[in-house]
Image 1 (cartoon, rainbow over the protein chains, first blue to last red):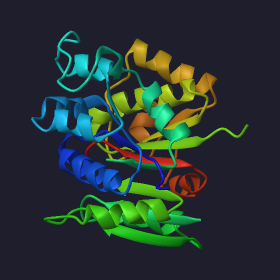
Image 2: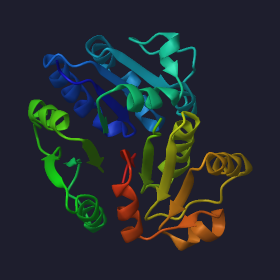
Image 3: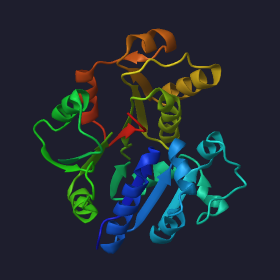
Image 4: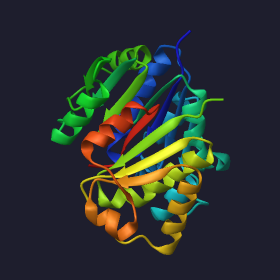
Length: 104
Length: 57
Length: 100
């Protein structure tokens, strides 16, 4: 069985890599969780973001970062639910519960 | 312990120094993400084969 | 139970303070969490961020810097590149954070 993979995204310029790695990992049968923080929360407005949410098993963003980047917390990005507008605890879950880890 | 170093840009002297220390006496592999079309399939295989992945700036 | 050890590295001024928040976030999740401000001189930390730093230290984490001005101005712990490299060898998770 494929290992699970957690991706922690801190750089807004890496969205193509997030998509590429998620697609490749899913094709291998891996469980994938992605968490976006700070300026990387801008990625939630990328046209391909809903596709990422479909592909990955779990996608969430740091709601505090999203707010600090100028977005309204009521404006939930397409593909997410209110409970996926989350905290840094999601990063902790990636580290504790997933076999492999990469930051981007 | 096997370390995978992933590079998002050409490593500068600081990164080279840290990689040198972190991988001393350890098994290591690397992957260059700063190319036109990265082979993500190969990257994921390397991540799964490593004990630790460090994705440098 | 063995607690995970994590180290964040910040090389861009705009990412250091928020990166410290991410370090604190992992300390709250029962991990040993550290941050290192490299290359750049930070602004003086405001009261809220100083409190976060204190909280992190209370949970056995810390923020270091390779830049003496950050050590003087914000009370960060000094570290040089060699020492940082040795510290990283002991980490389970290493996060080169944000932009360079």
